[in-house]
Amino acid sequence: MFVRITNWKWHLLIIAAAVVAYAPCINNGFIADDFILLHRIEILKTQPFYLVEVTPEPFRLTSYLVMGILKGAFGYDYRFFYVVNILLHAINGLLLRELAFRLTGKTQIAITAALLFVVFQSSHEAVMWIGAMNETLVGFFVMLTLLMWVRGRYGIALASYSLALISKESAAIVVLIVPIVEIYRGNRNFWRHYIWLFLPTGIFAAAFLLTLSKNFMVNNGIHAIGWHALVVLPNSIHRLLWPWSYILIALLAITKSGGFSKRQVMITAAFLVSVFLPYIFVANTFNVPSRHNYLASAVLAVALSSMTWQLRPTALRNLFLVSCVTVNVLYLWIRKDADMERRAAPTTALIDELRNRPPGPVRLIGFEYALAVDMAKGAAVTLPGWQWNDVELIPPADRCAECTVLTWDRSARRYVNQPN
Figure 1 (spheres, one colour):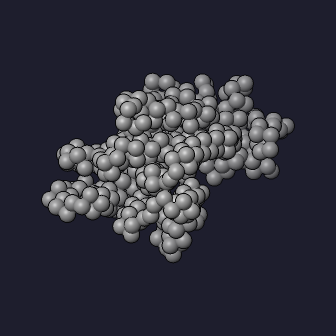
Figure 2 (figure 1 turned 30 degrees about the horizontal axis):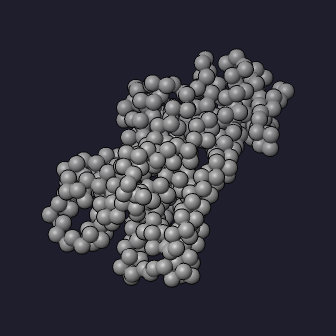
Figure 3 (figure 1 turned 135 degrees about the vertical axis):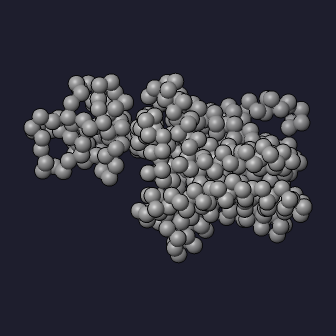
């Protein structure tokens, strides 16, 4: 079947699967940090070095470039932002297909891996949240880097890796992944080309250290080196594997369809540890957030695909694949889309409320993102006539005679006008 169908039809199927899986998010509106990023784009027009003051944002330049282009072309019409991010995810699926084929030499494994990857719900934030576009962008450049590397196009790989480093600082894992790829390929003679990767890595490291004093992720304790990383890593891998990997392993054991060599297990584990490594030092949780599962989901998709094609009989294999794809898509439609709508509600409802009012001073009570008033301000300026300083947050006891006071009703997901 995989041989008879031409490549372009498989490409269309992969793109269609990504679009179908994530289409429900197109009407979700901007969410939380999106408004801060959109406002920073305006600041950058007059203060091009502003991002240095909010490090690590200088290492997400490609996100600001893409969002700036989209904002210039479509204004605050969030639908186009989502469409572009979904298509970027689909392109990443095509890159994974080609990369998996180059590594395994098996068309069926490559196509199945791509299809599983584009519908996986475990990394949904990377596609369903515009502010997490840096994950799909770094995924694009990292996979392009690896693909060009295995093709022997080392100059293009170096250029792509350089762009990856200004898409997300986690791109530095390439220096760990490339040796794993070469060990998997059985190529021990790659060091002459590999050493060139340390040129952009060195520049990145110097820039990271020079801006460390302004890095709010580190200075505010959001990321910190500590013992908790030893818990975050295995817990995050477990959550990524659950439930499909465990189901598949059980089916393989019950049907005695195939086994796993120690080498395969070690290589897959090395890939997963490498792609998770930049994210396990998050201090406020014991799980890597969904958006940070993006590259890990690509690794898992290839491993699952390889295991699936060992499963016998064929009917059971097809049942597993159909179930996996269907359940993931339905979970995205029903559960994850609703989660993202809920996260967007405080700002979406605020925009709806302000749209029916003349611009003027507004004070908010109970805003769900109370520590980030810039989200409310950023939401307001998406409307004509509204200014950045029109919206503020206040405690219930504070009043402003000339202000409109709105209280957020979380259960009803709307604002209630309060008398002064």
